[in-house]
Image (cartoon, rainbow, N blue to C red; front, side, top):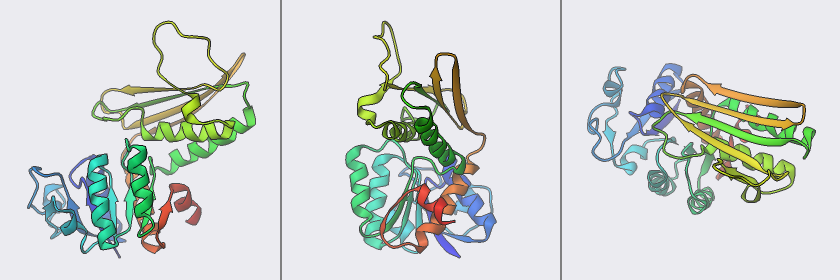
Length: 267
């Protein structure tokens, strides 16, 4: 049994990760972490989630949450992720990081910590989304530069970063497959009078509305036809299951920075 600690344990993702982990019997919950001031602090996390007692109190102290853990799962804000990363590195606890909105400097700090501990970092833990990444790359290479590329993503109105980490990662993969960089190719939304579309341009557009879990579409279009590849998540359980799969992988690995492609290739 793999002992887990979970950040944002009472939130959308954390609660589903804990619920599915307990149901699977493959995991035990060793730590439950929440933000300072959260109403569940000090209470049993199982009772807070309506699951019955798990004998694990909710804490805002990362060292307390991680000290008995074999893998820490992190879906939170960039600032919180870096604080929890420091505790994981100090305690030598592997991490699974699904936090998005990270800056280049924050990403470098994760890579540096991966010299000491195994870290699986991915903008999206869904198996289907990672298939979308591969299919998008293959389509880009097959269709060539005569096809124009647009990416559309949609999420719930509470999501703070835009575009999503998944959309940005998809765009990075497509730009690389085309032989350019996202920095050169990306156009984020459009408004007013626009110059003629450049051949290598990759448009990226974000929708924030209602309770949309997560939709991503890549469009390849040329005169006379278009190809669309879409992934729609109807439940956060798909991300939670992917995170648990990554936790099993991280628990067995040497220090290093790994992706979901590594996880899926190994299982």
